[in-house]
Image (cartoon, rainbow, N blue to C red; front, top):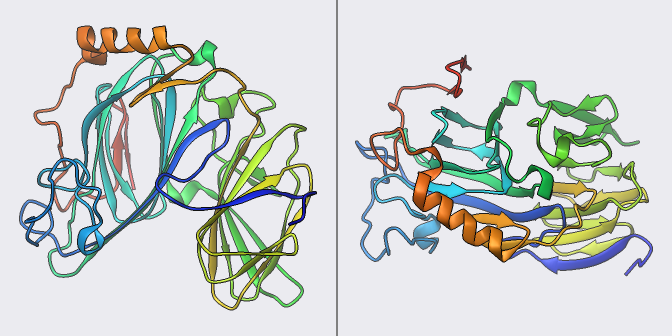
Length: 339
């Protein structure tokens, strides 16, 4: 192992391993069948523990959904969720009054701050063909000074996410989508105002990387001393990182101060990169709450029982939009975006 560049390599599990300032990363990849009249799976649910179904039975899970797969209303405090969609649709609703349908490359960035309740449902809108759904959900910590900020809902639409295209000496392409951070002339869209990603010097980057078969690409060194970097090799058959062959489905922690050459094998490869300056504060977590002390966790439960973080303005815990509805977002202030 090249001790000068690669810190560690470990297999991907559930969830994926993460490093400060990231708390959690999971890759949902479900081969849902065609949808039924209620936008759930047109298949038997026998043998599933509905409401706790992470089984992957038949290649898909209901998660906590009873009718439509997904995650009905649940609270968060003290961190942010970044949801990167690859296939399928997500119907979002929250206690701020915001709601959306997004997918196919769109990104939702939600600052939970002092407390928010949201749901994320995966409507199976196609009745004549399968409904594959694939996404990353990433939890990004907040520093202590921002854990009790006002919640904030942000949509980053796929058409607006900057792409960095590079060709090697053989003309093979590597394409990087900059959800956050800057690569060459590609600059990520503004993150929420109280995010760690918005702090000067955070050096935070969230990139998805696609390499053509046989492509070579040099991942440039991070800007800041002390930045930490994790590269996830989740799709592909062969990859060499800094001269070392890495097995598929691996998380590779890199020393961020150095350029790293990536050499792809003879199949297309996809990677996810997470990097940033560590927050470097104590982490106390219990389920959906992430604070700095156990006393703050206890207070989060007290506050949620008392206020439900503003209450739930929707008629059900798992609302979905009409089948024919396209991609859109209605923000808490009433502003509507349609794509």
